[in-house]
Amino acid sequence: MTKLFSLFLVMLITAPLFAQSSINQRRNAFRHGDRIIKQQVEYVDPGRSGKQIIWDFSRLNLINEKYKQVYFHPDKEDTTRFIGMEHQTRYRYELKRDTLWMTGYINRTTEMQFDSAEAQLRYPFHYGDSLRTAFSGKGLYCQKVDLIAKGETTVTADALGMLITPENDTLRNVLRVHRIRNYTEIGIDSARMKLETYSWYALGYRYPVFETVKSWVIKGDSTMEHFGTSFYFPIKNLAELADDPINEAIRKNEVNTNNILLRCTTWPNPVENDVTVNYELSQDARVSFRLCDVSGRPWVSLPEKALSAGNQQGLIPMSGLPGGDYALYITVDGYVNRVKVIKR
Image 1 (cartoon, rainbow, N blue to C red):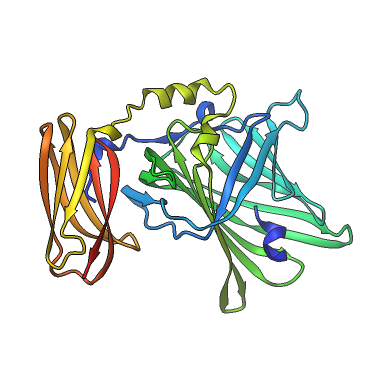
Image 2: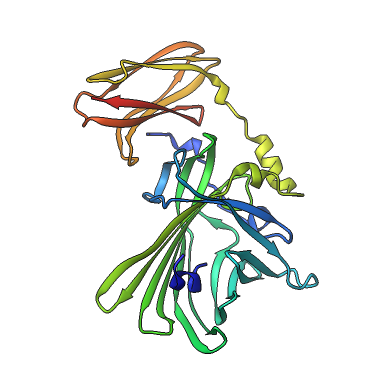
């Protein structure tokens, strides 16, 4: 990561499939002793906001598979204060009533203390909620050079949907939180900076399952993209966090119906006009189809239908579509299965 970033880093589906997911303190607050492993991957475009979104993160290019993150109380007698340790930096947090604040950070070269702290989250935080705060702080670089940081942060729960992990697990009730930090003053020169973070929270998991970070440097009238990366939090690791009975109970209550779709074939594939989908259901289920290109843009959507157990068939019209690779998402009782289709 560059020095400047190191200094200031830190288908058509019916509505009933998506509960009004939210973040709350009991399920999602930091906990002393939690150790998380996340994997750094190439930057992934976060996509649009809104409801009924499908995020397909099944194909990611790995950069660093052991990026560690730890939370602990600096004073065990004060459970309102936390340290979040990552990227050789200690971020200081404080929980005041229903709001989590970042109060500063320190690493080998930089120390920053906010006199006006930055609000990170409010509990509970529902889809459509937003939070805006002004922050300011002073610090030192290499214990010699005075630093300043001043600006405004906006946090919005801007999207709700379904996420497909690199292990091809389908996570429902996923809430995305979008944070924009605009620095009006930063560092030791006249440059300004914008830092944008997206975090995806899945019901039943305490910490985000995916994040993207992107920054821009602003000098005068010019804006230059400065840095971008993404992180995947393997759900196996998140599920193994000790003593988290609330989230464990939620995961156990989630009925996995992936075995309802027993088999699925497409013909012809590659296709010139229409592709036929032959599949078998182990029980009665509600099924819908959505065809998207490699960028995630939808081209064909077939509405959900209630179907009986047994052999079924669907027809996806593709005659007018551009050639290339497509992803066909088959949603069965709320769980998504993906099939690759090639258009000549």
